[in-house]
Image (cartoon, rainbow, N blue to C red; front, side, top):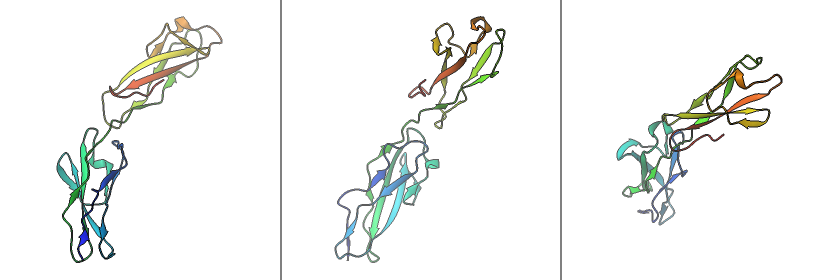
Length: 173
């Protein structure tokens, strides 16, 4: 028997989706006489057909891409026309950062350098803001990657914090 054309379009999951998210096209079909249905899939990224599987690899999408899927149901005898899901847009992924200090120890004549060790899966241009914490308090005198020995005294404990931004999202302190 002819499978009932899906009354609800297929859905793309998960939403929101990010650059590193594999997507799944979830069909919504049923058959009049209970026959088991199989599905054929089409994925479109920016209106180009890129895959024919139930799952779309994240390797095929980038931030800002418009993505939707189409599904056709078959009961083994007859197939429906393809039905489209709503489009989703691949969202920005916030950058990550893991700051480190060099050298890791020193004297009152040692200047320290903070390295953000930042990355962004969307390959966005990154900007980093620095701040230093001295003896548990943010040191407002320094907002650069280098903490000069001018600001240290014997026994100080210092570390750096970074806030890296891709222009849309940031790591936060």
